[in-house]
Image (cartoon, rainbow, N blue to C red; front, top):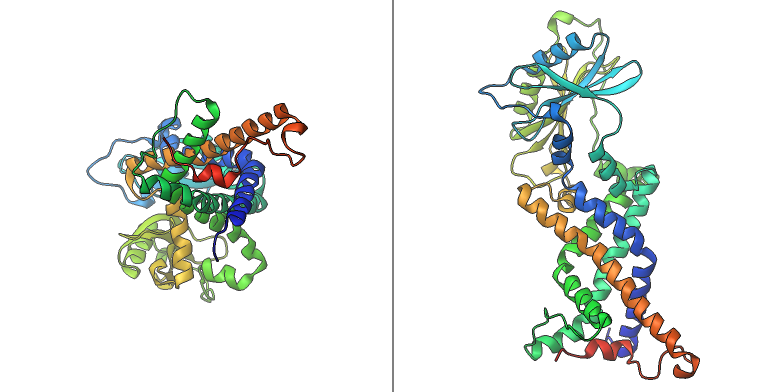
Length: 397
């Protein structure tokens, strides 16, 4: 399809109104997302009990679990989470008095370093980004829709400014120059275009992955798709006969069995056998793989140590592998602190574009109001104002 001036003008209108209608929400998501990429670092900063001194060797997980039971008699321990950093404590998940509690244990000494319950600062920021905090799966769907709008705005912006950029490059002009001394409208317009161009690829990725992570909550209405992209452990039938406590595996043995069942597995968490069940669930990541956190799992029989089920994320179909890529690509949690800083800075660009887009709309609206009906020729456009396409086609002097 040939992009005529009329079609580009229509895209310009869609681009403008998409930004105006969603700008406030995109700004909130932009700011909260820039902070949310540092969730583990914020957790460590505000929770001293998470910070430990690395030692030569870690204690067995069962020793850490026993320390929790001694420190919190009556607590029902449900599992453990293992940190990616060596200077971070284990997080033991427990229930006590009907309340959930996170208990921290030094993995090198086996000593309880502290506990917390209730909401955390880091998680509030994360949940503000992924679901507007209060709104459950419906909030995630709304965020997914805003992801689509960001994707749409980025694509239409690319098409709208393509002709302008061709002229800039053809004349070897410095497109990064910001015109100064010619009024705030032109400077704002230049900043809007420059930041949009520099962050285009990033915002396309963020918009697409944000849409996937939000709209995948609609799979509750499509059970077949839900099962395909959310593989769940299948423990099978419980072994008949009374349990033999003497034959029960330790948590450390369950971890060892899981590693053997999935070579390359780096465990991130373990769930203890729940009530009326006889298996451990070990979640983890595959070494060297770019995928969703804890996407792989192994079920280990609690009494005989048999592998009841296993799932290697790398073995999923193309749709599942694409889905598993969405989370790391969206949050940048796969390349160290430098990449997170880059994500935070680039993540702010969508909010910046929303603000500058609104400013440009306000400048034009104020000019039309000041000009009055007689200056618009009855068509709502000042007689001296260039049409959007003509304005976009100009090159910088």
